[in-house]
Structure formats: structure tokens, C-alpha cells
Amino acid sequence: MSTVDSYLEKFPEAHAARLSELRALIREELPKAQEEIKWSSPAYSTETILVTFAGFKKHFNVYFTPSTMQACAELLAEYKTGKSALSLDYDKPLPRALLTKLLAFRRAEYERDDIGWM
Image 1 (spheres, rainbow, N blue to C red):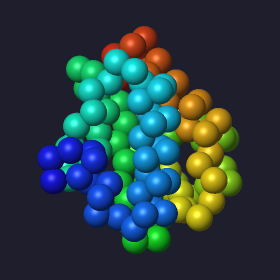
Image 2 (cartoon, rainbow, N blue to C red):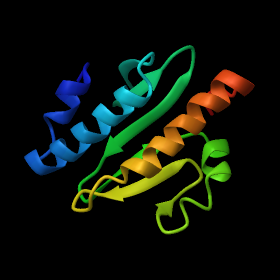
Image 3 (tube, rainbow, N blue to C red):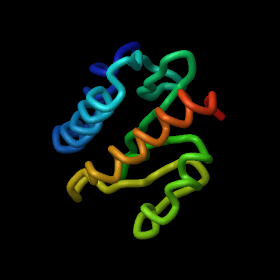
């Protein structure tokens, strides 16, 4: 799989639709980022990776830097998270406002503080 389109094709239609919604939001919030496949998952980068995501059977994860996750911990309190991952369910609406804030923080921490990928 060499493109995000081919990545999305491997998922059931409902899951692919939710991942496509996430993809569109990322592209809207990070218009200068290049879309590519890294580590077999969609990644969005400029000089460094800004965000990635991966779909699984029952959920999907959006990956940010640990510094983004720490800085936004209060916003993430009601979600399942890891050191650098936000886990979301396919059957729940995409938390667009939350993701927009996380993407904006990630973009700013890179542009302002030169925080690269992990």
C-alpha cells in the first residue's frame, strides 16, 4: 500500500468513512503538510511528521507527540489515551473541536519551538 487511498480501501465502508473524515480534517487544519504512508499508516509532515493515524478492527488512533498529549491533557481527560495516542471509536462522532485544538497545538509547537517527531 503506497497511498492513503489504498490504505483506506482495506477497511469496511463505515470505518473507511470515519477515517476519511479524519483525513479531511487533518488536511484542512494542516494544509501545508505532505500526505504519505509511513510505518504502514497515513502520516502528515512538513520537515517533520506532525500527526499520523492508524485504523484497527474496533477503533482508530491518532498519534501526536507526547508533548502535545501532555499539554492538552485536560482536554483529553474523558478519552482513552496513551503516551502519544488518542484512541477513538468508529461508532462515535469524530470529536472535531478536540482534534482541531490538538492539530493547532502540534502545528504551533513545531513552528514555534521546533519540536520534531518522537
